[in-house]
Length: 288
Image 1 (cartoon, one colour):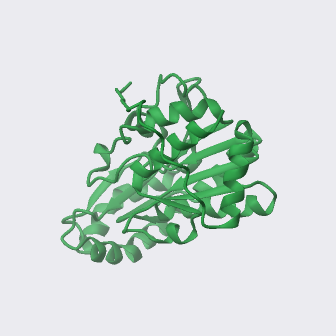
Image 2 (cartoon, rainbow, N blue to C red):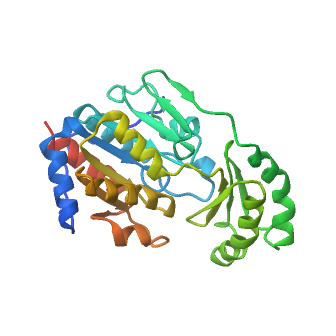
């Protein structure tokens, strides 16, 4: 378990005022009945700063203390990520932390599930298309003229191509969209775009499906979801639909200048992982 420190004497910031009526209703429901509330959180860009090498990504130093303070006051905390569940647990430092006994990490967009209570990852067999894509990917990148400056991340149940290190990251990203989509389609996969990354993964699971399934499993009656990237849009949509069904929810964007779609739909925009940590601390301080 990693070492995490925080300034316990620091006064939490006031809770932000949601800009939408639905967001205000979601925050009010969470504050009124926290024991029925589900807190859903993305990992990269939300709990952990974005870095050039994803293997070096680590949770913000204040994330685990904030989660440990908040988790005992709500029904459930779930980290929902495209990463393998075990990788998110290691990079987050979530295992063996007092207060996080009931934390759940839903990895690979919900295909994998890690529970702090057992310390085990439960997952179905991998999709065969991932191995086929992995074998063909070097040739596709070479033919697209994008071999230099791109970086391939092995994710077990998916493969991701990052362009952040390329001479022109945005141009490389756009140039790879079509050939990677064709490669994925040949092997029954889909492409999930993100912040200068294109992930080839099996269809059928996304953060919206994972969030909705967890809401039903826990019986949550109030929701908060925080994310930063295009892959978080399905979770935002899931909360929109749950609101229509009478479950209040609060949409939080961990803001960046790279992706603006979430900020346009969010009830609250905070300043990256540091802002997410501040929001979690404020919530913990406001709840009994």
